[in-house]
Length: 159
Image (tube, rainbow, N blue to C red; front, side, top):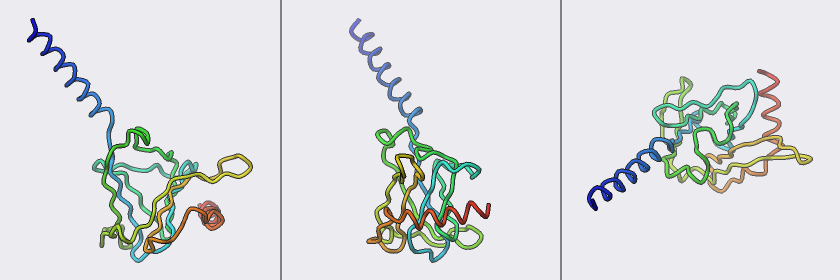
């Protein structure tokens, strides 16, 4: 009888573990910048009429334009179960040529502090973005809202 109960408990534990593994998918991230790009790069979320982020080979793909922008209709938690459950994952940064082909991996030493946050005005969220300093680890990108708004206005006006 003890063997049957022990077997059932082990089976239940294995079942819960398998369920958690299959329902809590952890995605890696790959960031692609135009060759030679340096400065503040931004992923701006929840922008109507822009493409959704894509997942390829279990990796969220971020393809930046020449201005260091990714505009997406995706929410900021795209591909994640939530910040508490995101688990460990790999993050890679690459330079790409004009055809979008990888030409060089960017070392972590050339990437500054990546932050996710929102800019609000009069209590209303204006922009939810991820900021990525490229080429100058000491560069702060969190407070350059006017620069980002100008880039966004220009991009959205030309779309």
